[in-house]
Amino acid sequence: MFGLLPEAISAELAAHGVTVRDDEARRILAHSISPMARRDAKKRPISKALQANVDKLFRATPLEVLERAQDSADGFVKYLFKHPDGALSEAVRIPLHKPNHFTICLSSQVGCAMGCAFCATASLGLTRNLETWEIVSAFSLVRDEAPGRVTGAVFMGQGEPLGNYDNVIAAAKLISHPCGGRVAGDMITLSTVGLVPQIRRFVREGHPHRLIVSLVSAMQEKRQRLLPVAARYPLSELAAALKEYGKACNNRVTVAWVLLSGVNTGPDEVEALVALLGDLRLRINLIDLNETERAQTHFKRATDAERQTLMDSLGQLGFPVVRRYSGGAHKHAACGMLAATFQETPAPNS
Ligand code: SF4
Image 1 (tube, rainbow, N blue to C red):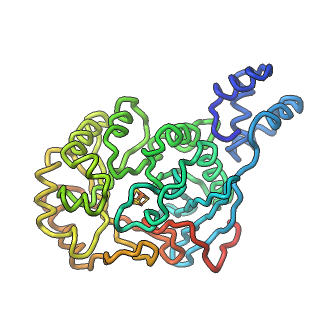
Image 2: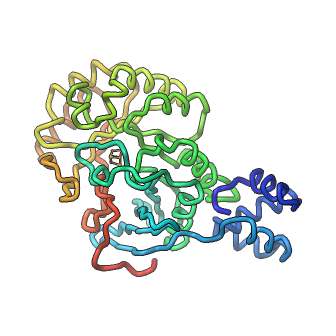
Image 3: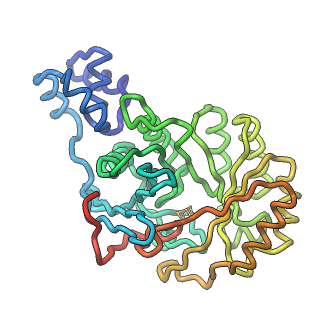
């Protein structure tokens, strides 16, 4: 039953001859994914007969948690899930600066087809898209164990979220539904390497969620080497789509920039970025590369000096620049390290 909005729950039950009122459909959703709503719903439970129908008609098996690995350095917890078909995926519980507040990093696919040169997930290749119920189930399992409030979700785990557009958007709707995950719509972020048609669709459809585009380089040839998707959607097309998005969201457009020593931190990149997107209100998130043997690349994390020089140059041009902390590295939970691997020391169940 994970994966259906109240209207779809009503329609599905009606197709099997079971009629439910709107409030009952909302409570069925609450029972399925929201512990807080579940507590409220206990006061007004759905009838036993209806519950029996729900159990019979909807999938009730959540994912199996194979492992929880907590990074003692920063409190990040990586979850490894087993799906009914044996596929493995991951999610990460990320502590926020505000005490007892968390966001959850979710996967959108099993593996990934994008082949980014510096990413461990790329080495897996793509097995399949995650179904909506699988994404929501992962969210629910991680959230139920959080020792505090989950106030956000980011699709930055395994996979390219816009490559599984329909299921990811449906999951985001459920995670932000007041009877579902209860996360504010604009606290859900989808990260993309730049699938231009899907960015345009996202803009047309007017979702409340945020997009972050992993730019990494503003130079076409280099970007193509680092992110093969750039051959399909060149920077000129991506820039045009980002400008549409900037206009539609009436806010700064965030681009992510994984820092690769000696590759994309120089003045040539700053110059190219200004030429490409200088007329757009940008926010730039700089992310340190997490070196992992799984990625089997020769890339190195940028030095402090390289990072600082780039930050200063961008800052002088008026771009807000944030150095994003990418935690959980000791448990291979950080950006670019999710490759469905086991750790040795499981975390406590919370
Ligand atoms: S960085 Fe993201 S899109 Fe690129 S290979 Fe890794 S998971 Fe896929």
